[in-house]
Image: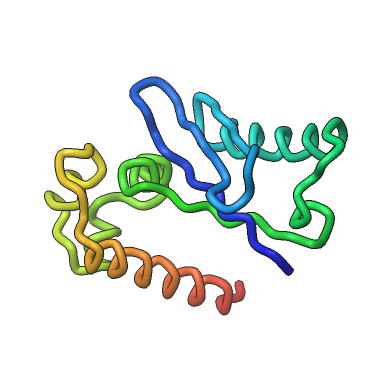
Length: 130
């Protein structure tokens, strides 16, 4: 199965998205959910109305979403507080707030630390049963 990587970025007034490995797939919205739906709509329209459809869209594919730090931290702010992220990552809350506000950008090692902690949490949640 092929993967289409969708990059989601926050601008001053909306979210925008584009596929960085398939030409012609774009989306935008006031929220991340709207932006994701816009990408799905763009793919549907491309399949329906374009004569030349990219090969990846003619086969089985999955979408992955790549966020910049500001977009990710703001999108999940209501679910993952800075204190929760500090417990998960070991990165202090003040630094996490700097990342969320865009005042500072995390170095690659810090981005990887955040990503690894979130993936570990996801694995633990998938293994949990109530």
